[in-house]
Length: 330
Image 1 (tube, helix red, strand yellow):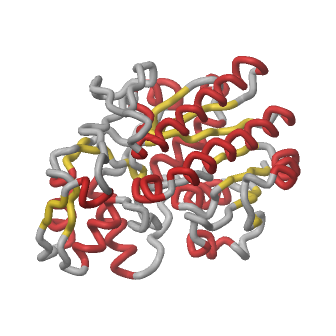
Image 2 (tube, rainbow, N blue to C red; image 1 turned 45 degrees about the vertical axis):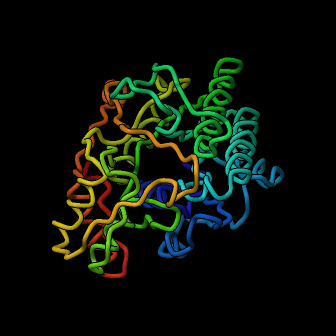
């Protein structure tokens, strides 16, 4: 099949390229490299069936051509990272919503299967843990820029499901929970590569808040397997499905695990949210997915643990090169 991946030079998008090319598909990537990196897909440039277009999904004329000639669309392009969201809220909102609107419009016109990744951020301040796809959503006040990303992604979901309701567009929405692994950088505040890089250098690991907040981290290889199954399962059209891992760890525990597994002499330093992100920042205390729906609909079962993630990222950062691909082993 011919497959279009927007944001394909990004962290998850590049792993998706590896997976789909390995399965024998032709892959076109469009990415403006604003948050993605050419180095993520440089190894694919000479690969048969791979094409890279450096441009933006906001170019409607180009997107119409690309969508029309493809069989599947993975819309991975998005603003990413807490730091980017706090520093550039206008760009965050515009990039997310206008990009998704463009993609869905042409997928609807040409009846293309499309996957729209959302985020666990949409659960906001919800306290019903683990988070279920049918839960009510509760975000903070609009003067707290922290929630701009969550609200923009929520609007993406409403738009995607509106296309399903009105025209039966074959679209599936997936809420991703802290996908991590090789190729992810700490540039935009991603906690796992930031902690591991500091640990490898025996530098102080900075934890925001008191470290009791908890997260679940899913290996990118597991998540990519899930993404490809979702778009190929018609029962998932018009559905919202959580993807990730349900192994919960506190951020302080993550820092301690990174230190232990890398044999680091790093110390942990705690910094307030106000100092890290500015006054008025709000965070979610726990973020745990209910994966029952994913298991039922696509047989999803993450097989890689947090220790596997830390070891894979540490191996890449320690060697200064890409870790070996592990697709097909889930």
